[in-house]
Length: 339
Image 1 (cartoon, helix red, strand yellow):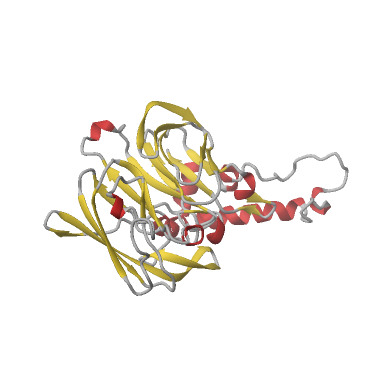
Image 2 (cartoon, rainbow, N blue to C red):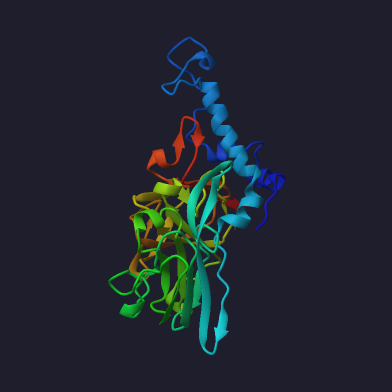
């Protein structure tokens, strides 16, 4: 869905977007217990109220201005494959790169195929897959298929199931994909550094029998990360994140995947998320929540029934992962529901 600034403001029915996204920011004209004008009063951050408001508004305006551009790079692209008989063959190249996490902020990163997170591998339950991994980095690595039930030799743990993939070397993984669900792939060598520097990606296995999952209209993957790249969603921090765009009545599936070192409780304003799967397994009893605690390594699948139009903040509720006196940052995006 493409959304221009004019269309965005029209669907919200407002002259500015800060009221929709920066609900937690201090508002102009709020009375105080002092007779001094607010603009001249400094907060604990050393900013006046006017300065703080301006900083919050600037971030939201940047998010708004870049919606179309960021939507093209924020959501992970699918990794193409070639067929070798009945086997789907994927190629991943591990590379040292510089990665821009937000406007004008570049960090040293490690990547699959030059992007963070790596491209999404999407297959069907029972597919035969072969993944050819080339290491062009300065250090050894490996890939673990987190949540996928592989033969032991394909589990991807150096000196336990395989030798490390040394710089300049290639290693080939081959297995039949099971079970269906939302899974991940990531480094399992110097993992606290390599994964949080970007060696991570989504591995989505669709069921042969579609009736095993609830019906939905759109499908988004949101990978949470922290530490070396900072607090990011899909490798980007606000305002470089992109919104989920939906229409009234649409059922949106979000696949949360925590690849970081910290717990992140993801909170959606204005409506429930229905949690129907955990770690790729369908729950016997789905449940509703507006804040979902996601620990490192966990995956959760939720459905959002989009009924109320507007821009709804969507963020980690460890508040210093999302907002400061200088405005929103890090693990913040929005759900935008069109009238």
